[in-house]
Image 1 (tube, rainbow, N blue to C red):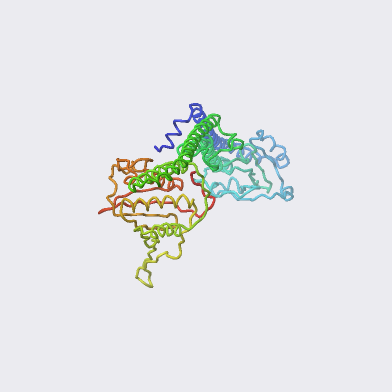
Image 2: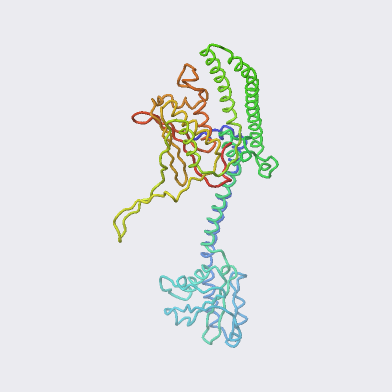
Length: 509
């Protein structure tokens, strides 16, 4: 588990965890409701279709009795077979049927095996066409009752209003409708889509709800672990914003606590900086007087030692102030050319006789594979296509690279500076021919005021702030400082910087 999530879980109050559990229970209940509703509706639909079979014998009996009645009594007798809304009969003479201009789609359902009992059966639907596959029985029906029993169930499976036309021997027709069973219904496929859609909605609602409940804590976890809250405008939270107002009460309390802690830390650092600045300023006056008085010392060796001690005292104070200010100064982001920056640093050292070499810039290469036209592989360098422009803080980077080069010259006798430019990364590598750093000391040398040379002699060990400053600058650019001992002799210091050309990019201040 990452430090960010450990920090988040340690700060997540019990009430928020209860809310998450309750919200998860609600979303689970909602999903199960959709599932139960969809499955229940599908079961009810199938039950209605199975129940519709009872009207088949009723239709067969009505048809047989009307066939035996005199023609003048059929119209009145047909209404006697009605069963409320379950099944309704209408008797149409041939002349009346001609004036019925319904827009129904008809399908002939007459079976050859019962043609002697009933010559013609037609199905009519106003919306959509009947599906002949549903209306074709697997086995031939034995009689008219069996045929109509199968048809009543098959028609109900269409889930839309329908009418069944039974033609009598004299040309008149008996029209059968069933508002209860032959009606518009939601199909099984539609219910299945509703079920899946409802469960998907519940899952999305759960994810969005959990993200909403934990967003503020994830944000505070990211800012809190980087100690960036209150340090820059991009990390600050506008307490008057709508987003902050909708944060949970616990998240607002944590944010306020982080603000207070960060403000206290900032005030402490600023107080130390002001104190050291005041000390440095106050030391300059007596140091200047001591320098003037040292000029009157006749013994040259003693005079030189006094002047060296004065320079050492002022230099140490300046280094300490610069290191403290390095965490407080907020240099504006700007676009610049890293090639020119590194080149100028190397030229400055070379001009004063330092053994500093700027190696040729390394660019990525592309290798093309062979084709049907040419089997030769080619390597294409991106030299000239990629430029060294990036967005960052050039003054801070110049100071960091200068420290690396100065350390290489001081402790490694020479400095070879390499620069690799890739589309998303800038690599500055400074290598020397010195003794390197013991592996167990790699982490310690990055700590402020830590020196491998324990004598605390300024001339041999420095102030112990050079690599600490480089590490801080790398982290403010979301980069990394890597120290690697070379196989034979020397140390390689690699400064990896994520490359961006967007001036609005956000770095930790």
